[in-house]
Length: 167
Image (tube, rainbow, N blue to C red; front, side, top):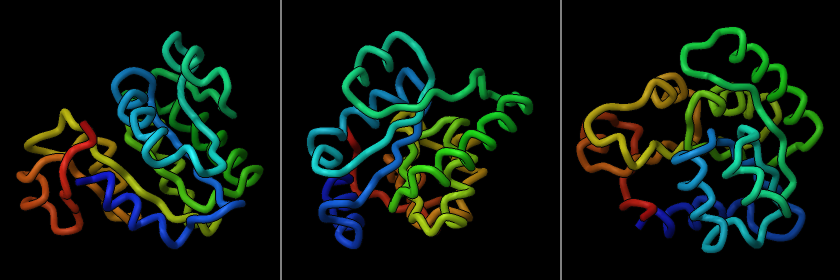
């Protein structure tokens, strides 16, 4: 199961004082990430980055959160704004691990994570069964761990790891 593998990956960063930076778009990407709060993230210091929308503002009201710029789908100005935001947040928060379920907002955070000595983990969307998302394609060669939720993707991409689904 994907949850067990995520727990194993975090052994190197477990313990008090370790910080996770959880980066995702609102909507389905956020719901996948948020569904891991109780089984995985609750015992860690964590910071969220998402879009300021109804779902995220209500569900993250008691969490430390930053708000990114949207839309991100093939929007170069917002990619640049989010890259500047990523630099600022990574410099300020100094997370041990950056984890993203996508979409576009995750790209600059995952690409810059290594400069701040943070591990990077990408979890491809549950909806992606046959091919990687644009975000997945952009970060594939740069992240430390690349999880997919489809056996087809596991077979197509050598770096991909399939250990089940989040749901």
